[in-house]
Amino acid sequence: MTKYIFVTGGVTSSLGKGIISASLAKLLQARGYRVTIQKFDPYINIDPGTLNPYEHGECYVTEDGAETDLDLGHYERFLNTPTSQANNITTGRIYQHVIQKERAGDYLGKTVQVVPHITDEIKRNMRLLGENENYDIVITELGGTVGDIESLPFIEAVRQLRWELGNNDSLVIHLTLVPFLAAAGELKTKPTQHSVKMLLEYGIQPDILVCRTEHHLTSEIRKKLALFCNVNLNAVVESIDAPSIYDVPLLMMKEQLDKTVLAKLKLPTKPEPDLDRWKNFLGKLKNPTSEINIALIGKYVELPDAYKSITEAFIHAGATNECKVHVHCVSSEDITSANVAERLKNMSGVLVAPGFGERGLEGKIQSIKYARENQIPFFGICLGMQCAVIEFARNVIGLKDANSFEMNPKTKNPVINLMEDQRKVKDYGGTMRLGAYPCDLKKGTKAASIYGKSKISERHRHRYEFNNKYLKDFESNGMIASGINPGNNLVEIVELKNHPFFVGSQFHPELKSTVINPHPLFVNFVAASLIYSKNHSSAKKKAEKN
Image 1 (cartoon, helix red, strand yellow):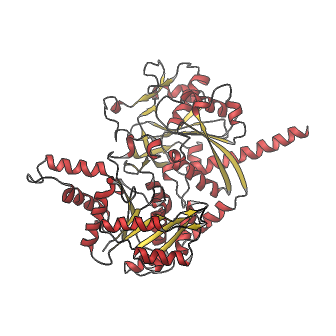
Image 2 (image 1 turned 180 degrees about the horizontal axis):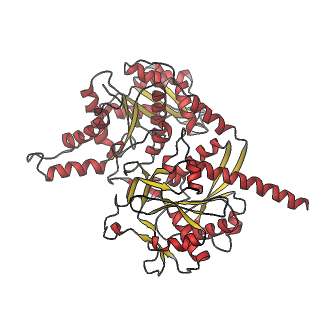
Image 3 (image 1 turned 180 degrees about the vertical axis):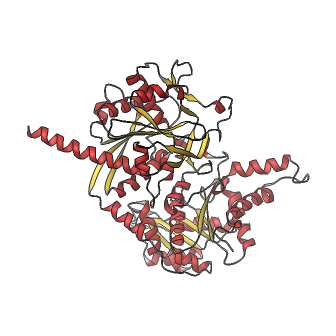
């Protein structure tokens, strides 16, 4: 029978429920258990697809095309297993389903209420992943903080579900903050006590406390928390600030979080967790033999979470190359033809990020032109690839007014055009080309060499495509389409022949990069940037001698 773990948060948001959930899942997986994680978000949007990245960070896309919370990216990067539509549920999805049933007459004329109708729908979704018998343990992370109005139906659903499941088949982990007051010089437990008291008011007694802290918890603090929060002493777990999120599983293992969980669920501890590959990754991550600077050109650079999967993919690729990758976020709005050389002069690689809309477009095009002409490794993702196509059309082929239909519907040369099936779309949510699509790689190309195979599958999130009417012009001038979708003949990858590394992908490779399987495009981009850095450095020293 599937066991259920619920992770709630208290005191403040952004304590890291997603990382704690992923770390616990990693430890349980390393012991041989089949584990998955799901995220329940309290906002009323159906999904994060229409949210500005400044609101909620990046929108993470799953294999089946669901636009989801960025925490699902952490789940996949830690567990190396894909998530799906069922792994991310919002209040909007819950209410939408209940209202559809009400309109269809499924409630037989009854008054539709939060309890039982909304809570029943929440419970149905909480059980969904466990009912197919693919998992031994389902971890459910509840977004928001205990006490939020939006979270109340989810908390009530957990209370009901725990009662229905019975003893030993579920537990609640409460992630909370133990702040350090510098003036008093001590850690304070009162915020955690209040948070647990609020949970108790809602009818839930947490089984385990995970305490985020900047300083180690003393035995007195642990005893105090155990006494006032009604938990066992060994169920007070310290979660101290770590240098990297990838240290957290090992820190949680040291705190025996996984053993405590298994004991409470009456499950055997089995063998000790097999984390050799994880430790090997951490060893390389913490002991780089070289370092490089990469410019990430985008328009949401003020918020690092807007490009979370990209920055994490660089961490994975950097460790593989035993190289520390310093990612410098550069606003595309600040780049002009006059300052591009100055802004990028110390960079060993240029990545132009995905995005939507015209803002910052010209800055991205100027960055690509500089990378192309100066033989600096370049990597374009989605809109970044489209910008590379526009730049090449304007400056190499000679189509001076070349543009994307998205930016200028009146352009005479729409080298990036709207897909036919998108022309009548009015709604924005869930209407793009989303999820995994196949791609055939041409023999002898850099892309085929990087992947080491001819058929791949990658995840998409976009509305506009390379315009095949211009393909012959591009290929005769040196930019080739090295990856093609076999079903609709759409261009998936473009690359330059005479360049150390100039690759643009219509898809989002960062979404499939994990600790265990770093994405080959990122690995090779970092390797090419490393070669450029060494050559550039030796050339500079030679020039200084002369």
